Length: 543
Image 1 (cartoon, rainbow, N blue to C red):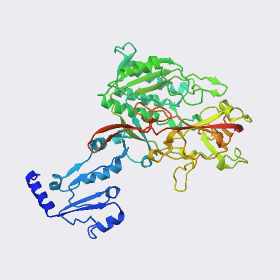
Image 2: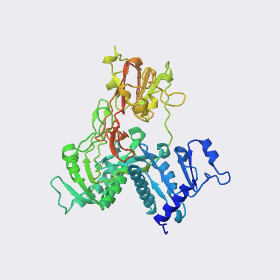
Image 3: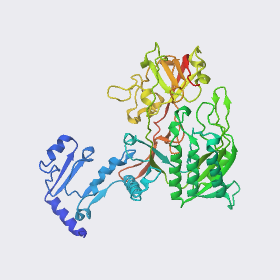
Image 4: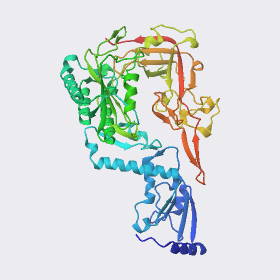
């Protein structure tokens, strides 16, 4: 389109301003909107040649202003939610070409960067669908990633888990069981053949690394998955999609590395399945001989570690902490250093009925409202003792500990009638630094803990899982401390030390666009200790 000459526009503006042919309207309430709307069109009335509207959330969306040409956009939350912000994008779209030629959008450089990044992520997602990648066997949708941008409210993606890949991140299966030696013999022979064929004729480097064809790697991983068994009785149903996630990660990483990946093979390994505390082993690789050289090589392409385990049983007084006396491969993928972070959604809807457990016998004579029900990985007898064990005082008692993350905080913290976290009236609350359950509050816990008298621990996810009922010392003897860990950018980390719960750094611009780096020191992850007074009951139905 032909843009008007600058001199013509200036002359037109002089005439408008000189004749007072303009109006400024503040739009801050619904009542003001009603008074300003044209009753026929539903649009804001234009009462002069130049109309200026000033407002906040009321102007965010849902109001139409005809012929609007100029925007000043200052909405700057700590984290942008993409699906909401994209609704604002109608400000500079869906209009005549003549108008678009003279439409101008003004904002800060920081907000401009976020909006540009959203556009990139949206285009990535569009290309993913246009290429038909959503129809692949992986059944995953890659939506891009930026630490300052959330794709949407988390409740909108409950049907799938949103997973994030970052540079030099380990991706591996955990908790799997294996078929018998007889059942997996043929598949293991095929995997061994593919591995040896890939290595044949290649020159291995000093640490045993070599280049592997992406298609072969995918074939090997698919065969490995066929040797695994997932069932309620093994307590590993929650990890059934681990191998799908690994395949998705491999697909994305190799797409960015031109199809290249490095591999290494280690044999005669004897890693157990269960760790001392009852949790699943999640680090089968040796930090010095495996992971360190793998990190050195995972710069521009991913590394696939194939660890051939002997899979032996290892009987203890608590049962088998090993495997099924059948060899198997344990794959570990390490993403490359120059990988642009990405988030992808993997369909993980679980089928089948949820098991119902009858707790009548365990809670006989106990008020259910006074019982905190928790899952517990490990043998509770090791931690709390046998049925009847009693502790004289809270200082010497065994303790059950939990992190107060927002996703589970309602189990531990009371809510008021409005559904907000209930504040302790004896502890002044720092309103200026309100981060919900992650509020440091000058080192003082500001909320009201639920007054439980018992904890019911359930070991495992099947109907025959061991149960232990613990009586607690009174609430005034519980300990709650701020023990949050932070990364180098002052972001609050989950208790696993990897996932970010809350961003603690930002860049602030003043009206002259001077930049100031800001770190929020008022956030933490609270840690609670429940001291146990007595082991009331223990019930084990496992055979």
